Image (cartoon, rainbow, N blue to C red; front, side):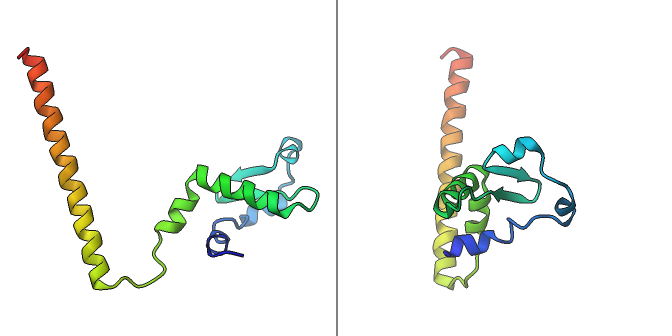
Length: 113
């Protein structure tokens, strides 16, 4: 089992109240059933590879994968922190410059220049 699947296991646990609620007939026909706390994938005909692929696509579309990857599980060196901070600052400055240019263009259009 890869690292991503192990990290996702905390998101995929079924809530305690859901164990007493039987599945509806409509959810039995589908591969997955999304709940408020995670994603549940049914393995059909013992095909685990297909179920894992379906789970990965569902995680990507729902954004759970991004949440798992964003969570830092290892120590960042100070040099790595500085590099990330510099990249974030450059991205922020580029965004502000673009906004300033767009604002100037819009002002010219509104004034008819």
